[in-house]
Length: 280
Image (cartoon, rainbow, N blue to C red; front, side, top):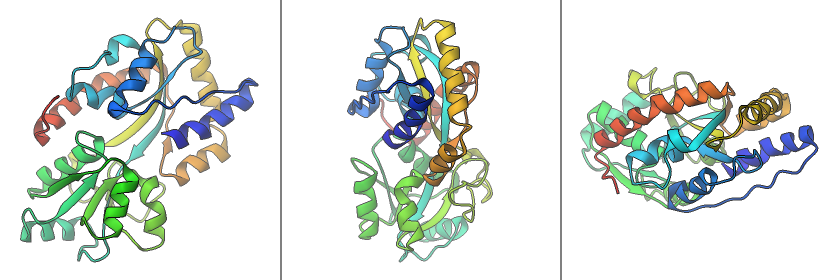
């Protein structure tokens, strides 16, 4: 998220002739930063980069100090982020079919890492295991780097990850990509099949990042920010920089983002229930 924000804000600063301050507020699975965004003054100067985890997955996991639909004004979707399933090269599987067959021969012996319980990475791994009819062990880590280190060392057999964390290791051959989520092949991994292509149509899932403001943000300010974002993300250099990191620009209208949040809230609630993750 920080990388994407810095890339986009750099272009916005050029357009607006104003510096943009990035205020990272980590902790509590994004809840701390989201609450600050929800409580900000609705003047257009303090906005929130909201992820699918923060806005539509967290509500199914815990009691929150904000309501996604009531406390935020949608401004624009920024990028979609297909996830990638990768394995250690020692695993004798080169595609989804072979990985599923291996897991069925070894029930409960394959482990997959994620960046934490209840994250999109974790839930997609559980949904994949459920759809394939296999049993795997989930191993949560405190971030993508820690999970990547464990995978590189062979401490876990596979990982569900954002592409940018894994691309350097994939390109060097130290990690093997098996499949990506999403309804089409990831631009950063065009030779890797999707889970949809492998026969799991219900797993055409992508994460996403968006820009939202506090509820009550005037329509004129929403439209100004949306317009500036559309202009910024039409820039070829910016688009290519995002695509190189596995992030696919997809700016739409404020109404498009609002509809996406309304649609995905119940979808992720069902995913959490199916994965057996206990709400906090």
